[in-house]
Structure formats: structure tokens, C-alpha cells
Length: 427
Ligand code: AMP
Image (tube, rainbow, N blue to C red; front, side):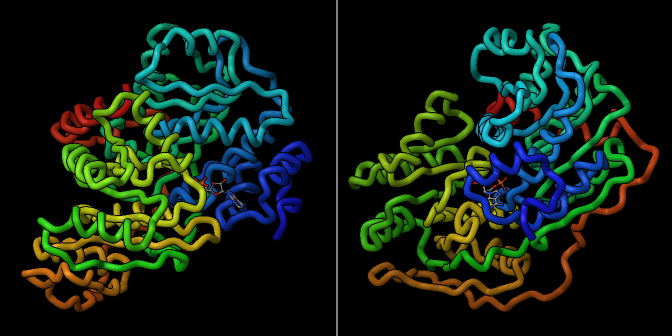
């Protein structure tokens, strides 16, 4: 299969070639023709599958023929949970759309709103936005949706996790009823299905690399270690193995800061990114990590979401995540697009239950190692794979005839909690 057979115009094929892509990824092969036809799509796809090009390329193609955006109007709205992800999607829109006379912009919180208002004044064909800032702009009359043709919800599961459901529904209520809807989510929980019912209309369902499997290109290990020895074991591994670029996941912001300080004190250049860091500090840390000036980037799950670093060789779970699916997301940061990667988890006895849940989800027992000199005082029990079926998580067919701003009935208690956590990340 080549890009040429997907029905994309020549301007886009040229841009794709310049990116160095030789053939479309599975999600691109499936999504591009369907989106070109103007159909709604519900796709189960994680970051790293090439989904951004999967929706951006056909959307740009469809924009070529229509009337360009008038003052303060938007034709394609892409909503996404974090600033980092918004910036990355916008970069893709610019790269793929470089040969087309289309205008695009990205807006997110944590930075001044005035320059964004100015950008929108001329109208933009494609707007990438985080929900909170988009609502602020709407409330200030800086953006209008009369010309809106397509709504994309990217990483919908994360948006719900971060408490954006209410904001998303408000935004949807402002949009014209007649439009194309694309919903991308790594997982299809009940909440996502409820959201989808009020959103997509007779969607084409796409699911790539069966969810919750981990890529073959990622080698996984568990290091058995006592809790108090994790930091010194990590330091030793980094030095012994001469790791140059390591993304480390920490459960908490506080833990991320503490570990960063410990690594620095032992002569390893490290930086932390999490929701309490300013946008400037996060951008700076990511840039230093990408440039190789910082060896270790310690991140919380939400801050790390969507970080796209080509050929990231090493991912470390300093703590195991409480939600097993997050393990799959985390290690999906490495071994991308044909590169090999290694994901190691430092696991103490107290985390055995979490490890068991993860192994059940990914349907394999992760090989164990012990670092010489750091044998755990309390060893981990032996894993026996639990082969009972987990709940199905494929996207289900949404009911036809339910569109636009319909309430999903999410619990208000959890919404309150989620909204306050959302405020930490996107202004
Ligand atoms: P995404 O899943 O959209 O975050 O994309 C993951 C990575 O794959 C990005 O770095 C893209 O530049 C890259 N990519 C997207 N499509 C292709 C392709 N067809 N061939 C090779 N790399 C690709």
C-alpha cells in the first residue's frame, strides 16, 4: 500500500514525502479514505500509531475546495487535552499543509490570550485548541463557529480523565449541527461511549493494533527492588548502561521533583515536568531533553501524554501506574515507528498487585531481573498469568440519531474532582 492510492491530492503527497514517510500506517490506510468521504469516525488508536496524519491529511484535503475562513471563523476544530499535544498537532498541520494556502493556529492556556485573539481575527481554517482556553476565547467573542465543518476530539479518554467533559459539551453546543465528527481515543470506556452517543453519527469504527497489547519492538523488564532502593538502582542503571535519554514516569508531582533532585545530586542531568510547572519551564525541560542537554526527564502520566520524541530509547517506570492501561501508554513512548526501545519497571513488593494487573492486561508475564548488589529484602512473589477475560473495550456502535451536545450524565462528584485537577494542567 502506498500513499498515492489513498485519494490524497498532490500537494499533500508531496508534503508526506518530504516527511520521509514511505507508506501509510494501518490507521492511515483505514482512516484517510473514510474521512475524505466526509464520514464520522470513531477510532481506537494510541499516540505513536500515526493517527495525527491519519486525520490531518484528509481534513486538509477536504478544506481545499471550500470557502476559506472568514473573520473569527474556524472550519476545522481539533480539541486535545494538553498544551504539548496541541502544539505537536499544530506542527503536523503546518508540516502537512505547507503546500496549501490554508491558515491554522493553536491556542492553549498558560500563555497570554491577546496574541491568540489577534491570530483568530483573520479567521483560521484549522484551529487546534485545549478546551479551557477555547471557551475563554469564545466568551470574549474571539472565535465563532458559523463556518465549522469538522470537529475532532483527540485523546478523548484523556480529556475525560482530566475533567473536560463539561467544557467539551459546552463547546459542542456552540457548533453547527451539520458537521463531520472524528473521535480518537486510546480506550473506549463507558464514559467515552456515552460521549460518543451524543456526538458521532453512524460512525465508521476503526481499531488499530488491538488495544492493550504492547509493541513487539519494545523490550520489557521488571527490576525487583526494595522501595527505598529505587532511586539508587535507577542511578546505577543509568551509569552502568550509559543511557543517554531516559523518560522516567513518576506517580506524583512531588515524587518527580524528589527524584530529579536525587539524580542531580548524583551527577545525572535531570529535569521534571508535571502540572505544577509553568508552561515555560515545561517547554524548556522538554527542549533540553530533546537536545540531549538533559539525560533524564521525570514526568507524571498526564504531563507526558502526547510527548512525541522520535526514537526515545529508554522508558523507566519508577512507580507502577495505578491504572494498568497507563502502563501501555507509558511504554508506547519508546519503540515507535520501527525503532527498538526498552521499557523497565522498578517494582517493589508493595506493587505486586499492580504488576499482576498489568500482566493480565498485556497478557504476558514481564521477565524479571535483579541488579547485583541490590537484591530485594522482600522478594516479589512469582507471577502467574491471570487469563480470565477482562471487560471488552472495543468501540461499540453508537446509536444513530443522537447528536450534538446531548448530555452524557457523568457523575457531578467526579466531575468536580476532575475539574480541579484539570486546572493544574491547562489554563
Ligand atoms: P502520532 O501517532 O500521530 O503521534 O505519530 C507518531 C509518529 O509517527 C510521529 O513522529 C509521526 O511523524 C510518525 N509518522 C506518522 N505517519 C508515519 C508514516 N506513515 N511513516 C512513518 N512515520 C510516520
